[in-house]
Length: 305
Image (cartoon, rainbow, N blue to C red):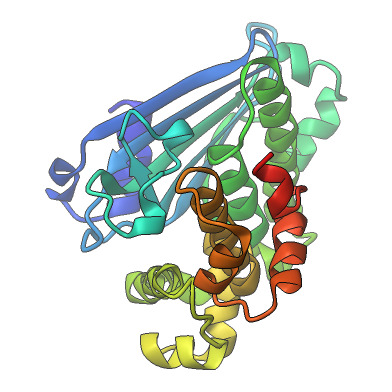
């Protein structure tokens, strides 16, 4: 069994369902001798019983081999757009609610730390952190913490290219290594288990439904209370679960998507600032301008120059 099937078999947990998944996108990058990053995106019907899961592989330094660490994760809840016109799989049709290219995916992320990076650290202490005093190679299944999920989402959706992409991914890989060590030395018991209720597929589907409802109401803001009622979920669970799955609060996610749609209306569709403000549900143009600048770094009028 190869590495990808290894973690997918743990994530799906039911025989036969893996046949419904197919590889639709793949990215390999890294810094030779230091770290490798491998992202594979598999089509994943929302009805498929896939769990978020992680595996840590550790090989201590020996006479015959240098130390090595590999982190492997399977995350659900994202969508992939294969429209060639969409940059970095960010869907240009999302604001119109008419994209036929978007596919629910399960993301398999593999991060391996090479000798060039690990040699900078005390080998005995490294072994102690990940494997106590045993000094033996091992693998351990973990439940991705809230912080780990946020970092993984940032790695999947990062905006960088070339050298900057590698630098960004390497810095985030080190974050994941820290969060993984937390789960071994028990420094952070609350975060170690993240949002327990998200281990249930039904609850994750409710969070995804809440996100879809938000996208349908970008021109007419909906309250947390009303959103929770629509998806039949406790408000507290909705807020915690949403941030764990999408890496942002409900409000921050809503505002980001709202301003992204506004940017398209201004830059590509030719609407005036006043027209876009109204379309986005703002009664005061200055409030819209302030929100737009906070998100994009530019005032709406500056974008049109």
